[in-house]
Length: 231
Image (tube, rainbow, N blue to C red; front, side):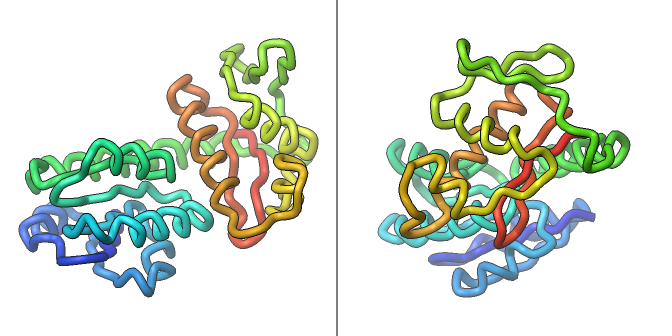
């Protein structure tokens, strides 16, 4: 059974959505935006519900907070989202945008597929996990600004993404702290939050998924930083 946390920012998600999820063996719990930690702990999918567009700032704050501390799938459910809102939420790390046109049955199937994909990835990780001293069998291509995994799949990166991978690649299976990452990436001490790093990691993971790379990943070490791992 998967766990779905619903954070009600403004208004409340309709009961029909909860009933459809629970009918299909999803455990649903509602939490307030002030108790976001409860949504992060042991949750497969987080849904941020907001039916007032003026609360966009609070939705953005929650997305940044969740992306700093969790790898759960995060969706924003609003009665109506402008194109600008949708793009901003995706840039901050949201996996999906949902609106009132999405019926309960469709939402349930989206959750089901998302959880299934996550479980398959976890099974691959458990089956192929290697000792910490095994190293990472990937290569960095500075000329193309890309990485090549063990199967020869080349993933093209932005300048900042490549820099991030270079830092993690130099210390395989070791956690690199937030402050160290920030300093190396932007050549200045960390000022406000870990959001910029979390957003960068999100885009790297998305590219791994798009290119079909399943033998490497960036693991979140809560409250510490990130490390590169091999499956």
